[in-house]
Length: 125
Image (cartoon, rainbow, N blue to C red; front, top):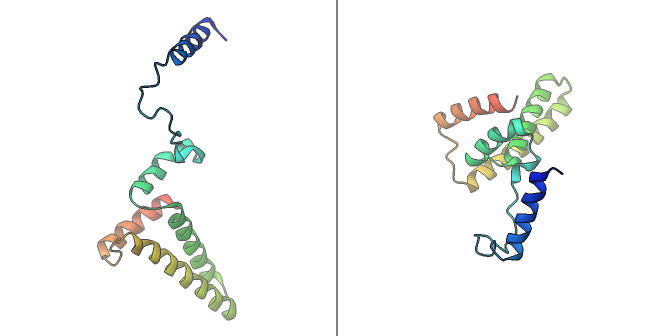
């Protein structure tokens, strides 16, 4: 440790012992750790924007699943597998719509759908 760090630590400890931190807001309460700590730094802004726009991690992962199932359906040649994939796709779409309806977002609007598709194409690629 360098000289400045040692002095700083000593002053912080003295202030703590003297009770100077007791009047600070949030003293004695658990810390609100940043939920984005596990997100890579270059993706935090996009994650925060999506979160503020009402998307949750569940919704994002369901949309990714929907896209991958749609891709599988396009490439599938076996009709039985294709039917099973379509059932799975419908389940995921229902789950996604139920999450959206809980937030009372009007997802039937063509303007919303167009905007949503543009955002998803940018962020989910």
